[in-house]
Image (cartoon, rainbow, N blue to C red):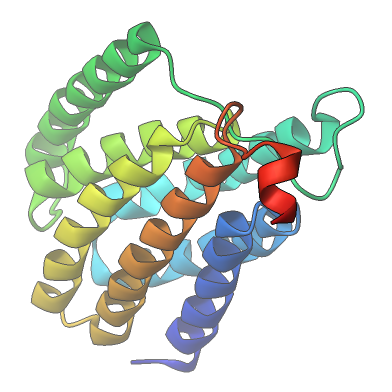
Length: 197
């Protein structure tokens, strides 16, 4: 455990908490945290995770832009979650599988990456979840829960115990985010008269 890992854990947890609260500041704080983790994963030889963090840096900027522009009349600090269309679900999952196979092959064939296939699959599906989050789809939280459960085991295996603890916390925050975002879906609001009771 290093000071860099401690700072990265704190910023990452804060970014996910702000995301669950649908707050715009999740993106710039998340950007700093993924850049710190890029360095950590370079040292740990988790190259797919390193690549993921660098792509996440770009995705953080994309998500920040997507949320900031919002919908007309929407609060610029809090977004309106959306349902993921079935076609989007299928395309996202197929992209995750394709990315897993392609990246896994590259990492297994051309690097000294540890657990290249699993690391590549987690990287690929994390990108799908991050894209869904930037697009404000509630389904992102379901995918994050699944991915984070596996990441906890990977980080324990790699002796990144503080990061494993962070990802265990991410699971809890993802459940909170899922519940919060589901309540905000269009059609899930109680009528004004009922809410006043």
